[in-house]
Length: 178
Image 1: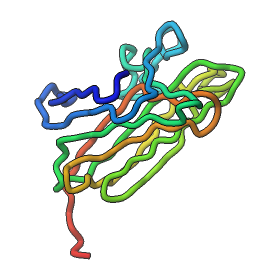
Image 2 (image 1 turned 180 degrees about the vertical axis):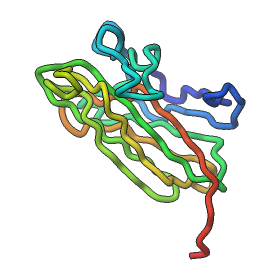
Image 3 (image 1 turned 45 degrees about the vertical axis):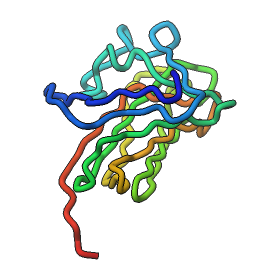
């Protein structure tokens, strides 16, 4: 995945146009999936476990970074500075011999992070060796003055970190006057 790759004017879940874009802002990203451990039938994705994220064409492949690269980053652009944003991330890869954890770090006007276990024996429901049920969230993110939030995907444990699905939710920001 090339540094500088940009997707502009993303569409919403109801197919409405938006000003939001994604730009890859580092090297080290790879793309993989169906042949190498993505989540697809016969193992899922199951709506009972993932809700709206249970879309096979989304969960069967993923972006990844390896331990040598340590992390990869992307930037969300075209965000409204009058809104707060919630980011929901899903990642998985079937690997039974190593626990892998991915840290997601979002930076706008403030910084938040969360860790998701993506791989390892019995990581998922019913003994599945990958994540098939958990979604990580970072909530109440305010974009910087340029209308941007950066997202770093980092190896927290194991050899790889994954990003398969990224959902961007926006909500009006109400100033407390503080």
